[in-house]
Length: 593
Ligand code: FEO
Ligand code: CA
Ligand code: CA
Ligand code: CA
Image (cartoon, rainbow, N blue to C red; front, side):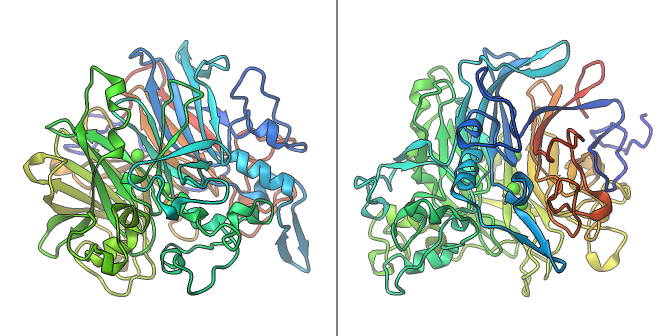
């Protein structure tokens, strides 16, 4: 029995000590190697990263900022050769651009972005597709890879599905309502059973500035999603991000985007059938009858859990036949009843309250205003639904609910008021069938420090002081059905630890036991855990290292904690801190965990 092993647990790695410092840490016996950093070349002819002289043209050929979702698509079924697909969720000006931060009388100011900086930010958003190969046990990028690609906030995309061409999708630049430039705030995502890359557009509201007249037909729609969020300066240089100039542009964001990675010139498609909201991710699996089910979280306090079931069936022998499966199907929203039952409510125009009298003249209206449609169906308002991972073998799915400090009224599925540390719900679909429209649910764990009674955490008693966590965000189910959870929001002041990757038992006597496998440098969150099918590599995304906090680092930018600042992963005075993707392998090879 391994040291520290827990009776009935499916994990036996030696646990990492929870804590906070400038570096990342993985369980003893494993290597955590940085594979891709912000600014790394994606093409053989890309320019070298030069942090003092960045440009849009260079950034378009380099790895983007704030890596989030990570997926691995094997090439020819290989375990040691494939495409890595990575989302670049957002940018942090204060950590990217030299000289943008100033301090006067102790007050920190970040200067508004210049036009050049805005264009660099736009090129640092989106996603990356890059060929990678394992050589002598270590992963490396293949810069000559035929499928290598950068997708940015300016890449041409097609609008597909029921909302395509609708007048509410039309703009001056696109009077047909069928073509849009770029994708933004791609948080988590997924790889479909047919090997495409799906990117979830999350906090799209922050990119819009300007005002609509209060009687504008989109006023209610935009109020529900927080447009204009005005967090970025893009609208000062690009009219389409100013709603007073281009009032329909926000309707063209907040979708799931599908990318055919086989052809680097393919036009990505915004799949409107999957609804418009603050999409966290889009993990999928094939149901018993061959239909494909996508679980979708809407990450905002009091928003909802959704799933989409394709109308057509997956054909494993014919990739081309699957390429438009995402244009037809049923979008459902979840009602978590007090007695532990679960009902999936269909969002179909003309059914129940989704009528013309309520402003839903067509299915396009239902999809453009998915949240308002779900409100009328009386779905259950949740504590910020993040990643959701289905397991088609068991007919179960795991819902990460990150936190909700504004909740003042509990319900059974969100049982804590002022839920600072979040919880995980296990969905048990009827008949062990992920396409079912009814099921049950249970709380797998209420997160937070189990040694503080008021927190009310419910990790198993076998969970060590290093093993508990708060704020679950992303998750993965590995090839053996084991659950892994990564977090966003652990910090010295909140939990006395950084974010990281935890292994979580979900079965038998060990259910509810969590163990720390990997932790990130100060200021970062951990995204995109992706364990390869052969379970020998864990790809993880270290996002926004050194972000937040009071102190300053020697690069002239604010850092998270004065005495714990990090310049990870290079620890080089000439390099800023850089979000990076890390490949974790077992020393000498073998199965992780
Ligand atoms: Fe981008 Fe919901 O985390
Ligand atoms: Ca997330
Ligand atoms: Ca995931
Ligand atoms: Ca998050």
